[in-house]
Amino acid sequence: MSDLIKAHDDCHHFRKIMLPTEKFDLDQILTEAQTSTGKARALREISKSGVPVYGSDPNDPSVLIETSPNGDRRRGTFINGHFVALQ
Image (cartoon, rainbow, N blue to C red; front, top):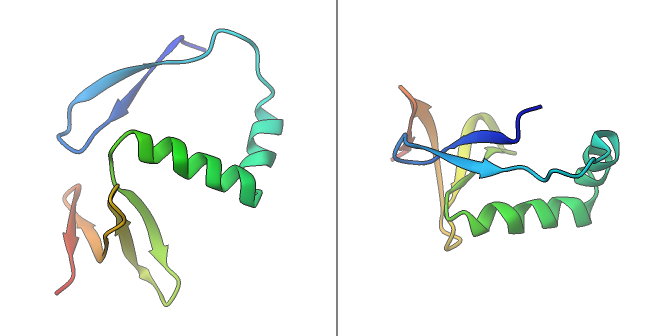
């Protein structure tokens, strides 16, 4: 596995993220990520990056919910790679 991965930000620019050089147990990480503690930790890490988080709307799976770093939420969908809020 490469020591670098590329992450895509809102402006469609790529930035490099260093991966840890120590060995890790992927099965353990994935199992932990499914717990409430693991999910909360993941959201904390994602929020540090300053980018929105997207999830499906539980009332309408065809719609996404965008949660901005400040907590604002918008319902919408992606069109041509861009989030478009519903009116």
